[in-house]
Image (cartoon, rainbow, N blue to C red; front, side, top):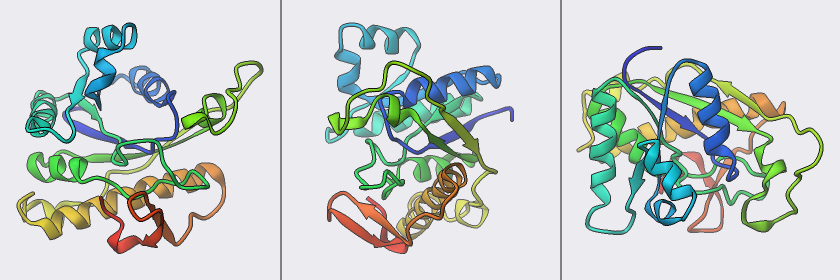
Length: 210
């Protein structure tokens, strides 16, 4: 697919940026990922992110909107922008996608570019998040990526990102589509409820937005 596009994967490991970046670059699209701004201050990783022209996300500050503006500029230039709607590694006890933030939906409604849901699985075996298990650095581990068709947002785009109900519905659709890809990879159905990190429990999917 050519032109501006939002790539929306699930978030399970520190390997995600490498897995998704490798997949996209070998598919002919250079990834521009949105990443927490504090990662750009890391001695090695920060230099890599800056040299690759990635997009810092300044959450919880007066400049939080700058990251969406930077992403919009990339999309309007025809780039592929990677956004992890969950914003952090999933807290779901079984590592299913959890409730999503609205950034990907807002950008999609603002620009009209397609949102491609991506499921990945296996990276958290190699590098488990938050030290929940020891890394598996020896031996082979299969890491798989499954890409879906664009999320259907046509009926919402005309309402724009100023319509909070449209943003909410778009976010739920995006997370549902990502979860469907993950379920396909795992070969089992996803839970009927989605983990909400703020409430620390699974809640009804229609309300599962951060």
